[in-house]
Length: 256
Image (cartoon, rainbow, N blue to C red; front, side):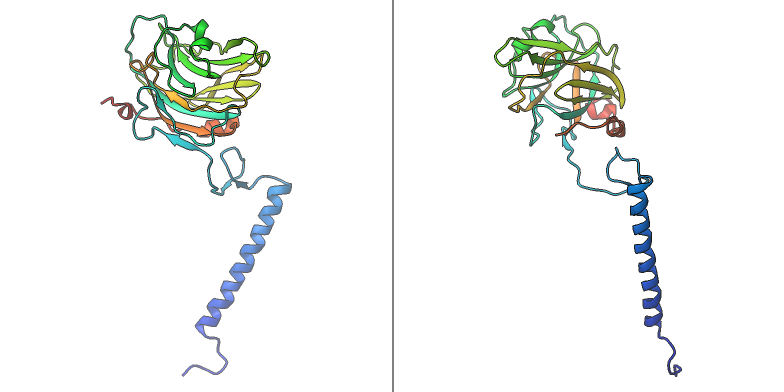
């Protein structure tokens, strides 16, 4: 028979459970104070410096994560903004070349797909009249460029402002390109490392309307495949870009 007045097992568990709860609350309060006054403790995104990761809903949208984009395929992103966004994608250069003077257009934004290849690097603004950004490869060598279509004023002729060449991007090896597109400049990253920065001379066009993104234009379809595309309707910091490390395997692009 249990002695009168002896604490039961339930009472003991409850007592120590209360001690643990009080201790936990006290530690959380201390950590919150340290986080906001001394040094970051919690990390709510890859851009934060905290050591304790707190998962929160992501605004990243994903397309073509099951297979590469087809010919003139739309990314089908929602809440697309015309400027002030980040795009990231894996590219695979197949090694196939065709004799052409046309840039190999990988990505562009437009109301509808742009057909044909009757354009040069100097006529991208007329060949893609509703686009404000075009990602393309040189027709003869593996140099990657991003062109922003700008204008000095509403109704004024458009101009093409292009990044310096990212020379000799990998062939037959998947790599990830990420660009951060703002009203004043463009940053281009390869596998998380900043490669080029373009500061515009004029504002980009299309700041009041949004167009879908298209991949696999006929000029590039045989030589460059795009897949595992990520889109954020905001500009990522360099720390966030570095955290986007996923790169597809060759098998994703159909290479055995």
